[in-house]
Length: 148
Image 1 (cartoon, rainbow, N blue to C red):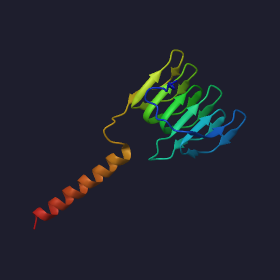
Image 2 (image 1 turned 60 degrees about the horizontal axis):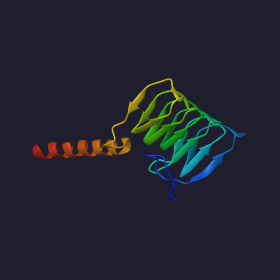
Image 3 (image 1 turned 90 degrees about the vertical axis):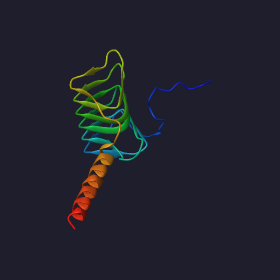
Image 4 (image 1 turned 135 degrees about the vertical axis):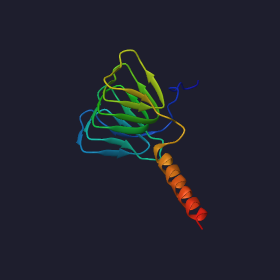
């Protein structure tokens, strides 16, 4: 009656499929959801500011850095993985690189050759840069007003 969903994974529709017999050389940016059954040699990035979902099936592979809101891996990634929200490493997942995450689920059989680093979830990187720029601006204006 009720659909069971993975804990922590945001619902996003898989709008794009890269089939198992497709090979892409170059960087790839996507929105919404992407299911990767094929192979990419290049960076794969979810559109910034969107709650993107990347699913790398047991047939899929990426050689390059990966960045998305949510990621489910059951294939191979050679490169660093940066996840804004939730990453799930299923039993056939093989990651040769560092994983930066907020929430992590790892099944028996998954392997990671690299560091697992929990990210601070208080500020997103872009928001942190904006906050730092505002703070610097405020301090500069306060300093200039105090000299007059």
